[in-house]
Image 1 (cartoon, rainbow, N blue to C red):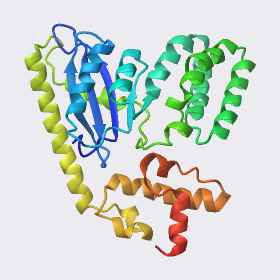
Image 2: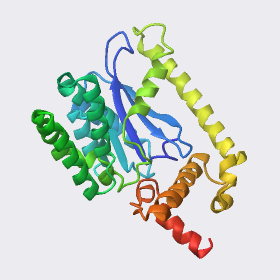
Image 3: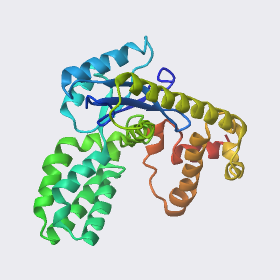
Image 4: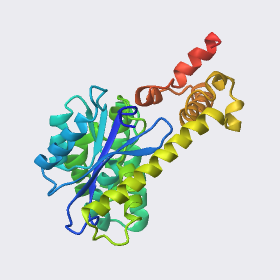
Length: 304
């Protein structure tokens, strides 16, 4: 699976999987049908650079000359980040927005009421989703004004110094969507696989050989679901896709997931670009390699 879909890797460690309380690392990828698969997993003695280095070197050896990952998503674990840089220096290393949000929660949530916190989170996520640097600066000014008006300059200073200034190019859309990432902005896929593996445990005090058996079962089920998703894409057509003439040639030839992304982009072309003269931003093209709204417009004008 990884040789077929090596573009994006998501890496995360969890605990409570074995009787020795050793960290359990899973490396997860995604298919063209938007399914997750476990590329590799490992039990390590500690979350240190040398341990992650060993894991990633073993993973790299599996590729046997195939394409290396373009994007690696992790949390802000410096040991893991350093190992990724050593083993896959050409890959873009991005940070999980979910883990960033968790860190912000721990640092700042107690300073807000529930209503104010929800408003702050919405504003922060709008900032994360900024599609251009100009929009980022505009959203940043809005966030700063909102916090200063509420006398929360310390929260803004924390965001700037801890996350935005050093790491904005690792999690804000206008930077991370310049590379093929297939809209992956978190390691939530790995968290999901963690949960699936643990759901098979009778307890969290497993021997390592039992842990391997549980992981094998999950991987077998992943593979069956992936094969089913391929077969579905080859025989099934969504009703609303039939009503979009530009999609006719690719129906049953590419994944339903990719077609759905194009279908939404066609709608955005009509609702945004034509109706309001909005700029395209080309996010679908740069992040997924699919024709974005402006490219679809040109193709339509050519009659293709």
